Structure formats: structure tokens, C-alpha cells
Length: 490
Image (cartoon, rainbow, N blue to C red; front, side, top):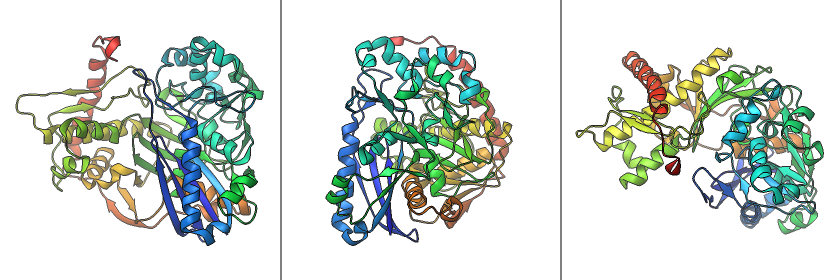
């Protein structure tokens, strides 16, 4: 038997084919674009996802026909919080409003201040969450709002494409502000205050449980011989946790992707909305996870790369291999606002301390350190909830920079371990969920930790210097926040 994991990302889709023993047989990717029609807006056409999925599966069937013929399970992991709106016929009403869209900040604030919302959802209502997006649609696109029969998250939309049924998992649904995260069910109160109904929500299952079966037309088109179970799936970070075996207390990872994530697996439900941490259901039954999220991580380096006309690798390579003392320059990594710990969609990034002697190397170093300090904010918030770590697993594209990882290890004062080469991300986690859903095997036996290839320890000689630099970083936020901004250039 074989299994496929789908990682539906913001900029592309990855499909991973694995065998019964978890070994990778093949992988393929397809890419698509994001639309930003106005400042703060971020949208995507869901047809791009289904087109990418279909062509990825056909590619796997062409290259690995025998293995695909034996496919028995598919799991989908997706970027969270997106609002995909369908009418009674199941047709998409408008482009999906994505996780990094901030237009609904006012509606998020209003919902967040509504009695019992934080208590039931376990979270602050962030502008990126799904519920405030629907409030924005209700106010600004009433004709669309009146036709909404079903609201699906991006991963659930692919579940719908695969099965013909509206079904979502707990981990993804926890980021809507409509789910009672402790009870793992839709909350009638949260739906009511968000002007939504239970019949507009998909059916809920655990991520490792069956959600349905693959449509026959797709099964035949993709060269599959027998029935295929579709797993409940997961939000992308919960799937990544499954991919690296982060199921139990004390295990966590730091992800340097477009956004930055510091995630801790939790054995119980310990909401702490006042910290601006996310507290979500895990993709497996009886577990939760907490994470701090910064909206711009590698995006900060990519931004500087575009301006400088040099690749991110060229920028970081110029810093050498020996960790430098903290830069005199401070960078606030708030290019798209920030979640943990500020919950501030309006704040924007800044360099503090520029002079005529500032070089591109100085700016690169400051950007890497600014992202590390932003992750430290999340680390401090997690510590307040009782989370502890002997080490953290480093994943994501930014983890290719050893210099950056040494900065982060020193700023957090926690060793970072690097998985051996191979698959260990959201696509593998989704495939593991498919394995569990198709066979009934327990997640603990399937979702093991990968072999580690290396460990990067904090630099004890620079720990005090980076501690002092972090304090000045923390002091810069309220100063930058106090500067009046031109709304037209936000």
C-alpha cells in the first residue's frame, strides 16, 4: 500500500508519495500566484489549487505508476484561516481571502471584545482568522454574503474536491474563531456572534480519521486500482508537527518559512489568549499544540534580497561562518504586521540606527537578528504557559543558513537540531495522517521523529550581548508604534 500527502502552500502545492514503511517514493510540485489587489489584501483563486493537485497527481502517476496503482490513502495539509465561500451548488463565490490578509482588523477587534469569545475559542481573534473575514464580507459584499451556503478552509476545499463532501479536521478548524477548541466542536455561541450558522460549517473529524473516499473519476484518472481513503487532514503547522513526530509535551520546532513559527506540542488544553499565542487542536485525537507566529520571517530576507539585487544565499554568505556580536542596527520584522506577542495588524517594519557607514552586510545581519528576536518573543510567551524544551527542531527554508540558526539558538538559549536530509515537513505529516486513516494504525506508531544530522548550540561567549540586544529590540516596538502613519501608504 502507498499514501500521498498534499501540502497546499501559499505559493505552491507539493505532493509526496510514500510507501507502507514510510519511505519516500516520489514527490512533485506545482506553483501559483497570490493576488494583492489593495494594500493588506491577499487572495487566491481556489481553482488554482485543484488544477495544481490534479496535475501533481497525474505527474506522480506517470513517474510512479505501479506505486500509484496501490494508493490507499490521501491526506491534505493546508495554509490555515482562509475563507473559501461556496453557494448551494458548491461553486466558489469569490477568491479565497488568505491567512495573511489584514483587511478585517476592525471586525477582529470587535469579535475579540465580545463576551465569551476568547473563553470558548481559546485565542485572540486575529485579523487573519476566518470569522472576522466573514464579518468583512457581510459588511462590504452583502450580495456575496447572502449567497453563502458553506465556508471551507483551503485544505477542506481540497477534501471537498477529492470526496464531494464538506469535511474538515479539528486542527485547521481551530483557527476560525468558530470552534470550541477545548470541546473540539463548533460552538453555537461563537457562530452566533459571528453571524454564521452550524449548517454552513463542514462536518468535523480528527485529522488521522477517515473523512471520506476518493471520487471514482479521479481514481481512474490517476491510475489507482482500489478505493482510497481521504484523511481528515490538518492545518499546515499541525501537519508539520506530525511530520517530525511532535506529538507529546516537551517536543517542538522552530520553522523559518514565509512566516516564522515556534510550536510546542501539548498533552492538554492550556489556552493563553492574553499572550497572543495560538492554542489549537492537534491533528490527532486528545492533543493540542501552542505556537507563536510572526507574519514575516524569510519574507524579511527576501524583501532585502529584492531591494539589494542579490539572492538571500548571497546575502547570508557574506556574513561568513563565525557568529558576530549583535549589530548596532536594529530591524523590526513587522513588514506585514505582527501576531505574537503584539496582535497588531497595523505595525510596520523599521531599521533603527542607520548611518552613513551602514553597509548591506549590516542590514543583512540586522534582518537575521530581528527575526530571531521576534521568535524570542514567542519563546517567552510559551514559557509563561509552562512549555519547556531541551532543544528545538529547526525546519523551513531559512534553516539552510547555519549562521541564522546560530543566531536563533543563541537568542533563545536553546540548542537547535537539524533533521537528516529527507522529507519531514507538512507533506510527510499529511501522508502519515493518510496512513492512519486508511489502516487504523495509531499515530504514535507512525509519527516518529526523523534522524537528526546536526545540532547547533547557543554561543556562550555572545549570550549576554544578544540578551542586551533583545532588550533594545523590545523597547523599539512602542517607539515605532507611536509614530503616526499615512494610511494611504500602509
